[in-house]
Amino acid sequence: MADARQRYARPLDLDLGTSYEANPQNLLPSRASRTALCLWLPTFELRLELVRSPGLDTTSVALLSTEGGARRTVWQVSERASEAGVRPGQLVSQAVSLCPSLTLLEPDPSHYDAAEDTLLEVLSELTPVVEPAGRGRVFLGMDGLGRLYGSPPNQVLRVIRALFRVLPGPLVAATRAGFAPGKFGAWVAAAGARPGEPMIVPEAGLCTFLARQPVTALPVEEATLDRLERLGVRTLGDLLRFPAPALVGQFGEEGGRARAWASGERIDAVRPWHRPRPVRVALDFSTPIGQVETLHGALDRLLERALARPERRGRSVAALRVVGRLEGGGSWMVDAVLRDPIASREPLAFVLRSRMGLLPPPRAVEALAVELFRFGPPSSQSSLFDRKDALGRPEEGRDLSDGEVPHSLRSAVRELKLRLGHSPLYRVVEVDPLSRIPERRHALLSFDP
Image (cartoon, rainbow, N blue to C red):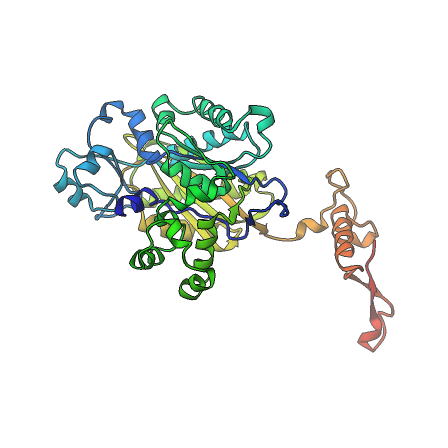
């Protein structure tokens, strides 16, 4: 049972709002795909490092975690290191004591992200429905592709061939593929498939296939899996012996979802992936920089440049990262997700400096980059009164009081009227400015340009 849990160690993050019962009456949202193909490359980051250093492929290798500090841990391990007892999450001292010949590699997050982005771009040429689920695992929507690529085996073969355009041959050979209705069935099929041997589960055989799988394949909490094991539930078929009300009474809504997944009643569709184009600025140093004060000064300069880029379009920043290219190879990355979007430099710099204080670069930095990759609403509404025409060209020489309404404001009022049925805006008009009664000096009139 422990081996099965280790195989499904990467939990499947399913969108709880995109489940569809297995009957033809239900309609999927626009561009969602019921048939899924899961591509999974275990230890994706470590395999990328071994491609850059092929001489280490036959040795015991471990990839260090991205978290800094004195007590660093192991992130991913090779098969030879695993045979020696090295496990992910162990301290470096423990791993070296178990395997003295262990080779430790520094992580390069920017290299991994670049490889993943290139992979997603290639897969997007085959199907418009691509949903990443972490580095090394991606779901493809395959609905309607039979007319282009033929039978399911031919569809999988076409996708595997496309991987050779961006990945080396050893990585493509190690990729596992699962084809089934819904993301859960496709993930379970990929996790149980052998490298180079895709597992295809037809619609009629989904329930029979899932019944043989271990209960650890369920994307539920670890405590729920422990309780199911104590109840003698070893496979998904054993779970079906319990009625749905009993599972809901014991485990809450999670118990009902687990039974729906195990019986094949719940089909999670593949949703298309949308990633907004980030705003990225970089700065190269003539000599590697190790002083924190110098890095902070460079960070301030990069933030000013990033916030001034026209691609930001006045939007506030909800998430950003700082990436550094380290001396001697490798990279260092720190992410910051903000609770409330911010548009000014000082608060953003404070957040990044705090994160850099907790996770400092392990070595001197040769180049530094700031990336704004998630945005919030516009930082101000001054653009609503910009003097621009319908084509976006600026209009000069007139004020709003002259009677000419800006195109942006006219569009906003039109949208409000469509939603509310009337214009909720008013304009102030002078009636009797010399009146001794303040209420008679001005009046409010409905603003409906």
